[in-house]
Length: 275
Image (cartoon, rainbow, N blue to C red; front, side, top):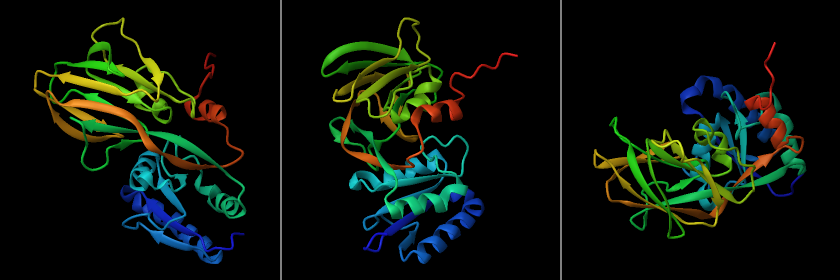
């Protein structure tokens, strides 16, 4: 048991309030019984030792956005469907908290990427744990994304968009567009085109120390930059720069959880459905 009183910030899915509230009450009762402090939906997480995200992966991403560069460990309780980031079941809440108080857990450090537009950070939160997507906007016409890696020309993507994914986000939008799964802590990023015009342009994996710059052309003279799903409208001619952020997101993991078993269980990886 920790000698210092621990502080927990509880962050729930506001769209599933009736489903989440009973579990928040369980957490509050547990923390009170263990002489810990709890803050429900605080304005910021400055004084928290841990953040408990209660929802799906979308809720987890919003919690990670609020944590930002504070590097407060996040406990992801899955109240949604897939639960790749939030992988603790509601039935495991008390057991997981027991492990936290006893120090019987591990911390995974996940790469974050940041976005700049014309050399300035995008307003709001310019950081993504999963991915940044450059996408066409309100038009049937594709966009052209002229892409450079460390100032060296890579290719001019003509497509509906381009996804720049971290290993964490490789099982999200990247995967649905045919990109590869990247194992966590592999120090790499992936560029995956969305519905490319040419069949000989494939996803490419690069080192996460690389700096990616993009010039976008569009018939509508605008495009979207989606940062973990949060969309920002940009005008044609805006130079987008993506690089590794100077901090990580820390995720609390149970010691009995393994990445490849999660792939098999949640994505049915390698399952043979033949009769």
